[in-house]
Image (tube, rainbow over all chains, first blue to last red; front, side, top):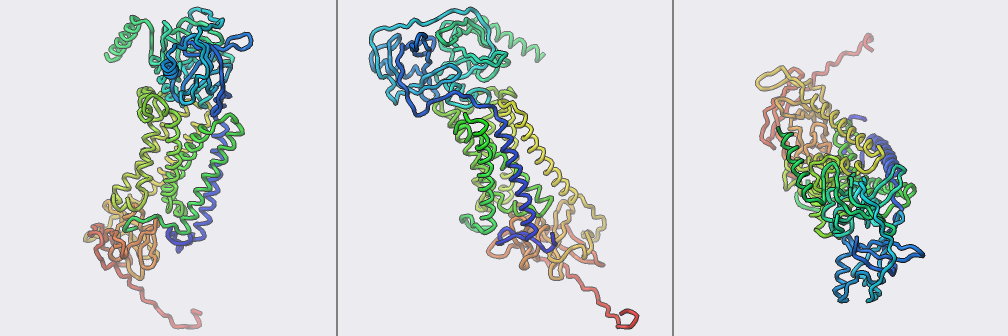
Length: 281
Length: 358
């Protein structure tokens, strides 16, 4: 750089040596940007193949039941397919069902209904989003209906996995799991979407367990501390059509413990408190 | 400096700068989006938008934070500094798209206000691995918003340069928040070490550049001037200062630039009133001391900006004794006229032409 060369931004041009130098630096910066872009783009985890048919609605006929979670049992060839229902956005389907029941003056439980909604599916599971703004109930049979639902008790079990919200996991969000999606999953479950435990075996195969309380009650306000972190869930496992369902007795992870048994909750709380006191001493 | 609020005036250099910023963004987005779609065809628009804008904003933030120390180490980086605020506003826009869309995606359409959801969904504030990382990004975005909103010289003028500069130093707080946001966020999800390695490389580069630039400044500040006479310190020889240029001396924590122009030495405070730029690394242009950072100008004899501008810097007494420059570090009030020190020309000895000295 010659000593008389001086750069002033408000002038029309820059000295030649400055221009040459900056050009070389810009080439380096563009090259680094390309390297960063390539590395980041190719290092991301694979996205799931689950699908949310956004903008497309499908009509499904089946028998509605509110438990273990609001769902349709749909006859497909010789098997019954269990299709959990979810609402629009981060909402469960219960509110919409209650509005429809109020509107029709009849309980939808165990009635043959035809719903129009948006399908979500992946990994062998299907869910249906119903939106009150899209008049989801197309047909309703007033007579009680039943399908030969295959419910089978599998006994006590303790499973380790990650609590997810099935709406995002099965297509709305990619990724719909893990730390980056945690807040969304908490919000979805708080809004009424049934919690699901996603488990992976040693071969990398996945299975999914709908979580309900020990007496079949909703667990939505109990699972917040177990969402998107490795957790062990213990309870009575059962097979309901093509879904596993667990009546949860206990949930544990590194940060929290939940037990459906009030006395053991007190015991856990005492244990934590005593432990804390011992540490302080 | 604008004396009233007016839209940004684009000159040729600014236009080139802005086109380069736009080109850089388009280039990066093309690479990232194109390759993600090739290697991950199941990617959704929403996730691509969130990831492209976040990674681009972080890349731009590293470029922005590197420009300061780079210009301290090599003056030829100055063209990058001149319009750096446009780079900052671009980075904020990318971060705002990332943050805004993430809040919409992860927190809206639920049973509580999305902004409330941001703070009440994950409340594991005592856990490192499970820390609610989105809150960190939110506070960083607020800082970027404040910096982008006050980036115009109108705010520099109204907030005063000292307050403005202090406010804009919060970019380092925002950077720290962003590093934590990434560390307890995406790095807890992605398993490929590339993510943490790239972040570590970026942070290490910034820290190294800042340390090198800092060391250079400290070396300048730590010069010792022993010879003292009536409050004046001997600082250098008259010949050490080039015409229309300056040398900078730090005496008793006063940074003073001594300029040589038109046969006279003048001493002014080295810190530009605009953004604390190093006046002493500037040059006399059209009779004015011109700051190298943004071209702010001051008259050498009184430290005042030429009308209608109103910036002023302190002036100092300087004198010449036996070919040496002597400097008094006691500052005069900003804008005080001082006579400077006239350089006496050495007598030219004309030798008679003889056959011996031809």
